[in-house]
Length: 122
Image 1 (cartoon, rainbow, N blue to C red):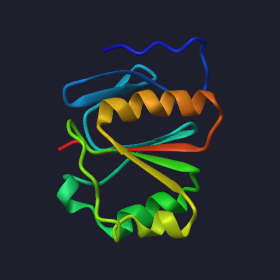
Image 2 (cartoon, rainbow, N blue to C red):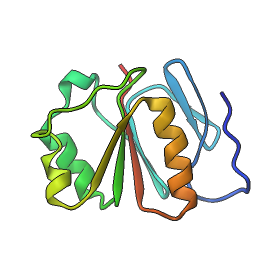
Image 3 (tube, one colour):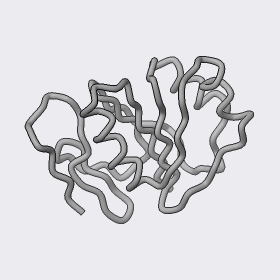
């Protein structure tokens, strides 16, 4: 599916997604990644089951207001102990499938929120 922004921007937006990939600013990504309005980074995470508290601590260190955790094709919730670093930092966590995370990210980013999408591809 293609997603269309209403105006061109220098900030990162999801421009499409499909089975096993997303597109950010027209560039295809098929591995786990972190997307913020000003940066994109690889996320060295091969599977949902490999999530650790350290993964969430690293996300918290990036300073978002809210983290959108895209858990692949289906919704899976991490154990609260794993996401505790976000709670301690006062950072919201929303868990959803990757496609919903892309759509939600674009809305929050357009509202100038400090949003971070952390997407898991297995």
